[in-house]
Image 1: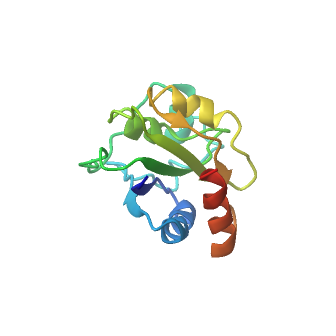
Image 2: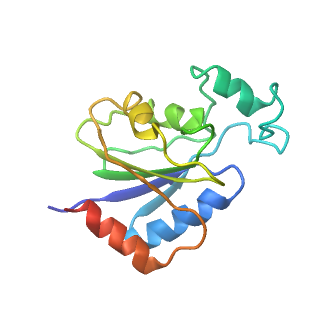
Length: 160
């Protein structure tokens, strides 16, 4: 069975973008950047400021930041790797904006994330709520440098 794969990602500082590009190369996948209509500034990312944009989004999980331009045709993909930085042990709200924009019935979603010190926590369970009908499989943290061989092994393990 032929699978068409997409690597969709959100990156606030460029770290997740690097991981997404390496993953797309290793998987032979198309690449799509989830860009917020209003980019996150350095001040927006200040976790210590309770009034920063990210802190406000954390306090209200119903907030859905708008995406700059939408993905036109998700229907062509069977498997979607979705990447993001971990914010407070889960995916940023903009990932839910993206997921809630499509019908995911019959698709497989594989999260990957970057973080300075967190793991995926309950991310997979959180994401499942925003993409009913999809199968969300356990994802992987892609921190630091990683070889294509490591990515290939992970991708191969997902096919089992």
